[in-house]
Every structure is written in structure tokens, then in C-alpha cells.
Length: 496
Ligand code: NDP
Image 1 (cartoon, rainbow, N blue to C red):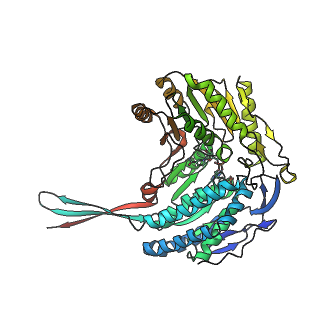
Image 2: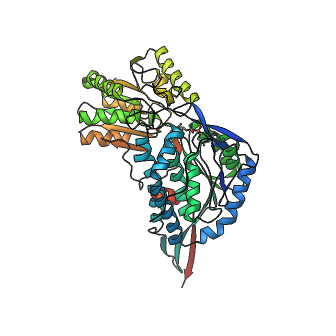
Image 3: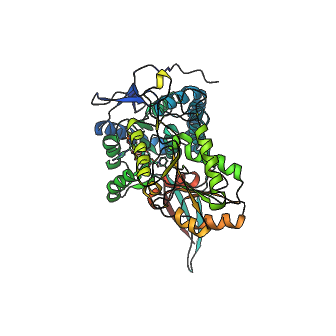
């Protein structure tokens, strides 16, 4: 049994980098304010890291690489499983920290974000125990040979993650990198650094060797850019916005780095009249508003077949009105705060734009001033349902990444598939129908990395995960991630 951690979250705490197994201050001594979205108040300080901190992290990771790469998989697995156990031990503390840092409801942090971080570690810690290598017996006219393919770690991996699912996505990148024998220099979003910091403490406690994981905090343009351009980091895994992904690709491409980009989405949710109606409405509301709509996989464009359109809109809007927006630490809240003041302004601006374009705001559309004294200045937005917009309107093409959904009627399968594919994105789609043939044919024609039939966000960590078009390059998950973080090397042995 693991003893309780002595860590307590203190007011105005200073977060530290984790470099070479030590919690250290930034080289420059500079810090940024870290704001709690539910209160609008600064509650801690995060290092304003820079290229000097990244250099120290790369030095440590480079030094640790040969030994970690040569560590038997069973030993790498054991230390990663210890980290997962420590995440479980600190579930409540990590969940509260995530909620304070990000604004998401505590129930969500407790039931999804933090358990998934532990699952990420366990999944890849055990996957490396069950891998297999490829071999080919070759026969030529005068010679025979055995070809076998080694998969070796790439080196120091750079991992850059966003603010919407902070520890969940941070560990989703780090776990396969570490499991396959790479060392890592990681940067969480400067908006939500707290659980990455707590995680780095747990890695030290679990006995992860020095330099194997280095966490450098700070902004994208400083720390992120320094990781991307560093000559000794040959592989980058990034999750974030499409524009940032393009900047990273421009920098990393000419350096011939291995690159995985998981980017934005504007995902269609297609509801046919023959669906299981109650399930479709309930799940579509969750797909639109979970995590305040700040999920890359959110079903933010709902298309409903015309015979059930009016009934669906009424019921959907009624359920949206019933979602309680409030202090995310209050167990009764369904919706918390969006991540920052800037992001709240951006989302409210998108709602104004929808109004200007002739959209009808069926419900929501405004900032919420939560009554509790603690949250009076927090960044809360009403769940917002919009109808009456063209499928190719700005609102239906841009990623809003907030609690805003459009609902549009359609008349036939051909039309809705065309509309679903009309955005520059191609991350995921959901289809609701009881017609098996239609489910398969529509799934085949949708231009996305994932299609959910009669469900949403049903995740199996073994399946390939990623997007097409401007939603990304490459796939994460299961074997795809293990292959990304390793280089294949073929060895050809000739014999008589
Ligand atoms: P950003 O692209 O703004 O940031 C993502 C990360 O990149 C942050 O850590 C950020 O740092 C960093 N960054 C910013 N600029 C640079 C740069 N020039 N070089 C290197 N790193 C940089 O995205 P958000 O954090 O706003 O996240 C929201 C976006 O992420 C949405 O578009 C969403 O769809 C997408 N996303 C995609 C997912 C997927 O799996 N496809 C999953 C989840 C989100 P900092 O913020 O600290 O400055």
C-alpha cells in the first residue's frame, strides 16, 4: 500500500520545472500568473521558461537516453505501473487540481481526466510486454536469408499538449514515448500546468530515473518553439490548434523530424429519423457540451433528418437549459467555466457572428454571472443552441471550441454526407441510425479519422486515433503510437 503524499495545494504556489529528476526554478527567474477560470483570480505562478531551460532538459534527456533505451521492457513497465498507482492514490487531489486549473466540473476530472491518465500509463506499460517483431524468410535462386526488423526508440521526444484535457493528453503522449525507450522533454499548456507539475512529482516519487522525463513550463512561442527547433529532438508529438500545427510543421519539416499532429475538429453528428431517439438526443447533448464543448471530438454540428427536426430541437434545447452552470467544485454543477477570459471572449464573439449571419439562438447565447461570491468573476457561458444557419456558414465551418452547437435539418443521405465533409477538418463523426446498411455506407463516405455509430467518445486505447485534412497528420493509440515512437531497422542475415 502506498502512503499518502505530503503535497497540499497552497495559495500562490510556485510551480517548478522538472529537469533531470529535480524540481527547479526557471533559469531566468521569471514567472507567469496562473488564473483559476472559475474565479478569474491568480492562484499560482508558472515558470516563464525559455530556450535555456529547454537546453537543460535536452541535455538531461540526451544523457539518460542510452541507459533508458537499454533498460529491459519489464523494468520500464514496472516504474510506469508505479506511476499509475500513484495517480490512483492521488486521484482526489489531482482531480481538484485539474478542476481549479481548467474550470471543468470536478465530477468530470474525477471520473474521466485523472483515471484516463492512469490508464494511459498502464496501457503502454503493459503493451511493451506483449509486442512482437516482424521477420521474413527470403529465398533467392542461389541464397537464402532471414530478415528481421528491430524497432528501436528514436531518441529524445518532444511532447507538446493543450489545455482542454490537461493530464489526460499529457500522459497520452508521454506514456508510449517512455514505454518504447525514448526520453522526453514535455511542455503542458501554460494555461493548465498544475497537474503536469504534480505528475512530475509523482514520477520522481516512483523512481523514474533522472532525465527520463523532463517537464518544462512556459509559453508556446518560447518553450514550445525551442523544443520544436532543437536539433537534438528528432521526434515531436503535438496536440493543439491547426494554426499552431502548421507553424510546427513549417519548422520541423526541413529538419526531417518525425511528426505527429493532432489538431482541431468541427465534427458532424448525423441523426437519421430511424435512430434510437432517446439515446440520440441524450448523447448528442453530452457530445455538444461535455467539458464546456472544449473537446476536439465535440459533436458541434448536429444534422437531423427533417421528419424529426422540430421535436429534436425542442428536446435538445430543453436538456441544454437544464444543464446547471456553476462552480466546478460544486458537485451539483454540470457545466464549469471555460479556460480563460480570452477564450470566453472568443466564444462569445462566435455567437455574435452567428447572430449576424442570421442564426436563431434557441437557447443560451450569453455569459453567465454565477451567483456564488467565489465565482462572480469566473468565465462562464450558457450552453448555446443555434438553428437557421447554412451548412457552409462561418459558424458551421470554424472550430469554436466552446458550449455552442448548431442544428441543421437535412433531407437525404447524399446531402448530409456532403455537408458533413464540407469543413477543412476531418477528426471524427457520429451517425445515429438503426439501419445497418446505411450506417456502414455513411461511415465509409465520411472524411474523418473516427466514425462512431450510435455512440460518442467510446474509446478503446488500442484503436488508431487521429484526423485527416486539417485535423492532423499521423495516428496515436495502440500499435500506431508504438510504431511512431520507434524506428524500424531491418537486419538481413544470409545463409547457405
Ligand atoms: P494551441 O495550439 O494554442 O496550443 C497547444 C500547445 O502548443 C500549447 O502547449 C501551446 O502553448 C503550444 N504552442 C503554442 N504555440 C506554439 C509554437 N509556436 N510552437 C510550439 N508550441 C506552441 O491549442 P490550445 O491549447 O488552444 O488547444 C485547443 C486546440 O487543441 C483546439 O484546436 C483543439 O481542437 C485541439 N485539440 C486537438 C485534439 C486532437 O486529438 N486532435 C485533442 C484536444 C485538443 P501555450 O498555450 O502554453 O502557449
